[in-house]
Image (tube, rainbow, N blue to C red; front, side, top):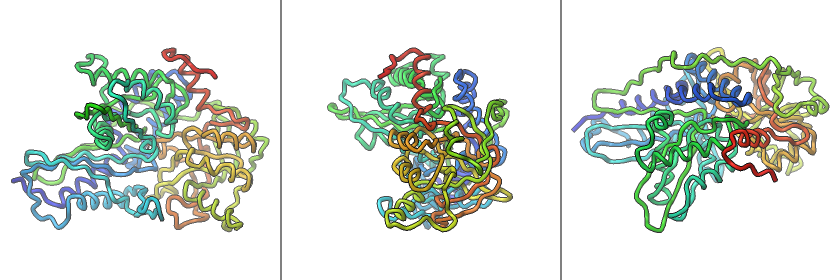
Length: 508
Ligand code: SF4
């Protein structure tokens, strides 16, 4: 029997979560670097450059790749010849203790994003626990752990279908992927689980994302079985959609497609699909009784020589003197560098504002959105001399249902988020001659460097969901919906799908 110490699992879990918060897997970086080289769409290339530059900064500065430091998911294979020598906790509690230590680490505090009572109070658990843990009891004397910190934006785009046995999975992916928008921060991976039962297909999809990216090698050597053929078919079909980095239109939407399968009922073909985003984060370690696992830092020479800088054509905007006329002059796709004071707010703050208005009450003292811009963000807490931790945009569509209210009742002029806006929000933007600006999801540390000061102005009890005022200097954003309601998330992919020329474009 192999004796495994409780603290070895706790420490290994905490170390792995810290490690993946600032080191992208090298396979992801090399694949993204190849995508950068091949990319022909200027907007997508710029977004990939921001993600690559952010990644290097995080690896050097040991700060999170993204402000959403994820929900922890672990796949644990426990050998049947393992003895838990000094355990006073369950294995799940040991993993949760590792999560707690990692997320509260004062040298690199991570964002606590988990709320309990999800259909009720949605109270933040404050230490990012609990993790979601999947177990397998296997032969042998080791404990193998695959652990990930999965971003909410990409997790929210997960899909499941029960296909007929003769239905095409490629067709389903081609139909489904455009409905997922850009909130999953492409380019990333698609994890696909086929077979078993409904819940088994989803777990397989998630576990498949723990594998390294090797599409380039697979294409070079050729497929050896049906699943490898299917991986290539889905990869080619998904990229032919022209969605591109951040949904701006381009050649690279997915860097790899992973598939795991399992026998299923003769009447069924369950298929789960889970995307992994620009903040692909996972690590693997094995405990064999010799102590806590050690993860070797990657060689930064394997990061490409890409250093993002604002395009020379970018327009500087003084947001402290912003007018509706100036907002109306912005063109779709135009790059802006924002300077001055902006307010923040995301899901919980919008809900509170809506509740205040419903009761006929005013906004809290000190909150005035008149002629201002709101940034949908939940930043990481600062460490050392930072004014704010990584602070990238969150998925804007979640605020769509509040957009009419905010534009009609608060005097707001523009919003910053990531991904596309839905029809309701686009119509409100057009009606009030406002604008929606996008920042790059997965470039949170880079974005945070533009923030020169930060203070909470309302709803402090909401933690990262409070309303902050940021003073920004040359914060890079792109006009994603202009005051006439033109959306680059519609025009960009349409243009690139046509250019790629593999799928007939529906113009109606
Ligand atoms: S890269 Fe995008 S989807 Fe992924 S964690 Fe960050 S914000 Fe969320």
